[in-house]
Length: 152
Image 1 (cartoon, rainbow, N blue to C red):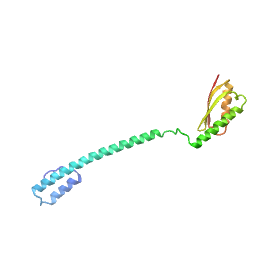
Image 2: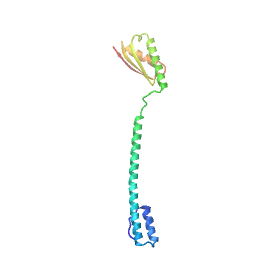
Image 3: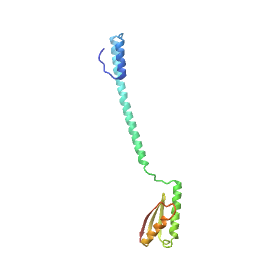
Image 4: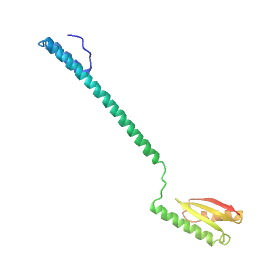
């Protein structure tokens, strides 16, 4: 038996066939050897293509997962219910500020996002800044108050 490159099960099968079947002629053995070589090369080519295919699939999946994870970090939009709740809070804070006699004539803007109230605008004194913050904090469902009021 001539020395043949061992390449997995296929070459072992051909070697086993050569050992136990001595009825092959020299040309049959040469044909078997050339067939083995051809099949081995085809198998190697398919392997490198499938490896390349697997690598490309992995890279595409990794890129997609990274893109989706990057986009899903924080929720920027409110639901309809949250928007309505924030509108109610804003209206209640504006009404409470208007009902306070010392703040009635001042220009105070109120914005609410997810229960967090932001006060902005201009007031006459530092006491008015403090009073507006207190009034806003006392309104029901207010989580926090960011007081950005400025004294004229």
